[in-house]
Length: 179
Image (tube, rainbow, N blue to C red; front, side):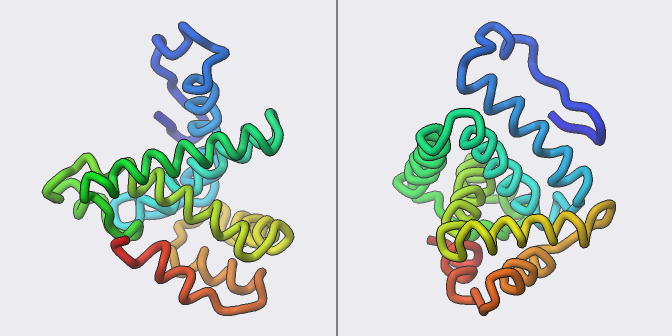
């Protein structure tokens, strides 16, 4: 779990410090120091803003530490996590509120949708607009909104700005469509 300036990792995770589970947990919680701590959001109304971006950012750690193969392995895990939920009939829009997921027929859909599909959105967005525009967008998002509370509209607008084009159809497919 993350708090501003500190993360707590369950002690049993340290039993296998070389495991991808431990490494991913640490990378994810450290990434929260940027996404939710430095650039805040409303975790009740738009939980995907920090969890999806934080999950994706942990994947960037794997890319840096283990190369393209490590990054691809993490992306495949997100896809499998999400696909399993889809097969169980639990697909939904990423942009739903925490309350919506808590009151859903199957509250177990929160993780695969918010974390898995949320991370896949950023993964696919990076491919859609290219590394230059994608990372310029993240940098702008961080610089423009550090120590503030943002909304999806803020982030999505910045990606359109950095890409130099509208991304409405892409956003509709990945964020607002239940499938």
